[in-house]
Length: 480
Image (cartoon, rainbow, N blue to C red; front, top):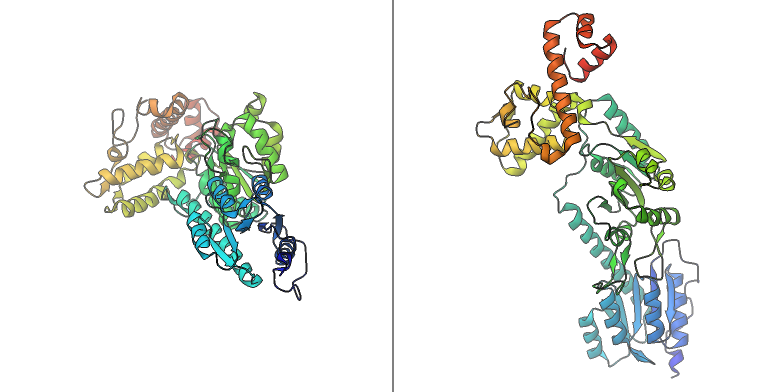
């Protein structure tokens, strides 16, 4: 029998329709022209995007020039063994699925190929439906491997599902705004101080979006060294640089079909900003060292605690990137501007911490609630959560007072009464000044209010403020 004719009948084969957008990409490496063409037509008819090669060297060139969901590989090639190509592929891309095609009588070699990393093998003459099933199974297995990797990253920090706790009208307006925006698929920019819960809102956007069934992948741009952030975002091919022993997918690829959350984007180096802008506009990325592009269908949510107008004016943030990411902007108010949320948030964190640490849930006494509401919260919700968790751990009587929450010099059972250097080295000068100013302002207002209990004009005169401004500050500090 002619080797070119060693395949099943082509009768009643599915039509050669073009692959659907985003179709899985398959590389067929087979030296027999007729069989190669038949496999290309058959798999294209099944909806795959198919590339074909007739030799080991051509197969290597194809592999290094693109990224494939599956490789279908003949064991015997005119310029070498398919086993050699298999080993090269698995070294460069350890999770690359490969199916080996083998003639009758080469079972031992097939078993050896499985040891080298092939996901399966199929004997000739080929059963096309069986081959299609193997391809589907291999691609699905690879998808699940990627999904497990993402779950490991997501749950390594023991994160919870988003839960918005607020009685504040501004926060309720933010929630309604995000709910409308989430359904659009547009890029969203979250603005807010550190600790205000930008990640919580990003996850909420993801869960409310058409991409909710896909992965949620987070990149903290401020936590990654400048020399590594491009690699983190776009990945690399094998040999891209010294030490790149195998290919690595970047966060863009891992987020395909889902949401990519770029936290603290204001800290991203300007050089990387240009490449990010290109990726956002073209919806394609090129891994470092690669000569090919990968289509990335990804929903983008970004966040920063920086003033991007100032960053742009001083040349640290690209204006064209800002226009690209700033179409929908949401500002999250700091905790000090929503004092009505402090007690319910604290009680929520008490329940959460008690359950996590296996401790009885303590109760906040009235003085503790007042102390929490007086505090300026420079670290916002994150600082409140950490403070409450610490109090739960050290509690020994089931009741939390101000000294349990704010231990140390300069504090008392009525809360902070004078400027304290506590935490200065931890939060920095600006945050410390902001915190102590708010604490002292609240104390001054409370003392003067006691002297003018029902006299707003007299209180305003004593403060040197207008009555409207005095009333606004009393409301902000929840002083009646």
